[in-house]
Length: 231
Image 1 (cartoon, helix red, strand yellow):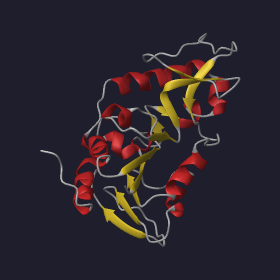
Image 2 (cartoon, rainbow, N blue to C red):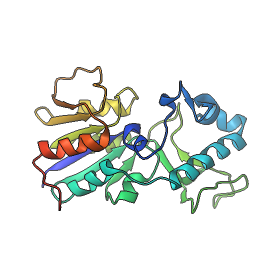
Image 3 (cartoon, helix red, strand yellow):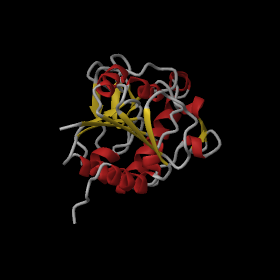
């Protein structure tokens, strides 16, 4: 079975109703990124950071996967599908995708401030001041903030190098290091890019552009791959 590796970004979640800071003038739900998504923000005002991500969880609980998510699940019948996502929501998992790597962390998990390898599920939407890890340290959102290393990057590179088909959905390939994954696709392997706006990129790869939103773009991809949807 061929390995189909997907790099998904904010565009696939946007169709489910999850906004991104890039859609609102550099603000994320009326907050500057520097104030809610950096280690410095956590040190300066942890209450604001906790409240911000609590609201993101509330929003994520109110939305459902869209056709693009379900198309990826359908492709598992025909390919070994591995999803590498820049998104922190759980919509891929809610749709039923089995193999998902979150490069930038997971919204519904927390981590210890003393030992980041101690990670816990958040049962609902709220993470509060005084919620402690087993070492007695405050829990923080399990999010890779701006300025922090991306722990899952090496694993993502290994998976990308093994891809027979590489698909990019809903990302402009402007956010690094995730955008650099396309450089690790083996020569001669096809790279499909699904996005309404054709990214301004030039790589020495077999690139096929599908200029469409995620849901309809995935239907076109299935046609390209000669996949017939179940009736």
